[in-house]
Amino acid sequence: MEKLTMQEEEAMLSIWQLGGGFVKEVLDNLKGEKPPYTTLASTIKNLERKGYVKAVKYANAKRYEPLISEVEYKAKFMNNFVSDYFKNSYKEMVSFFVKEEKLSSEELEEIMDMIKHNKS
Image 1 (spheres, rainbow, N blue to C red):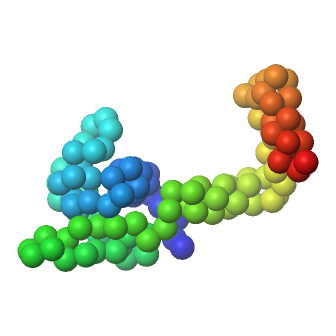
Image 2 (image 1 turned 90 degrees about the vertical axis):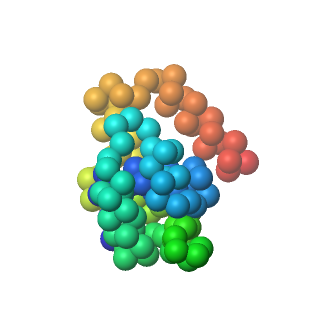
């Protein structure tokens, strides 16, 4: 699947929250500054072209439904992120955040507890 732009990702977040919707519903659900209706409609068309949503026709309007779940997208995005920036090593990623002081020792201990409890 093609990578999403920031605009596309924001639209997808709204579509996931709604479980699908018409362009107007997606627009109303967006957080922060809202793009013009036509811009959002074009963005959603791009999402359809990229295979992230499908259009279901209702009379003269189209309702857009997600073809990929938010969890699937996050997993794919994180795998690509770790691969591209950390040589496919989650250890290097965690090490980076520790060095940058973005991850405290307490948080690291919590992560270790999560790993231990999932494996046992």
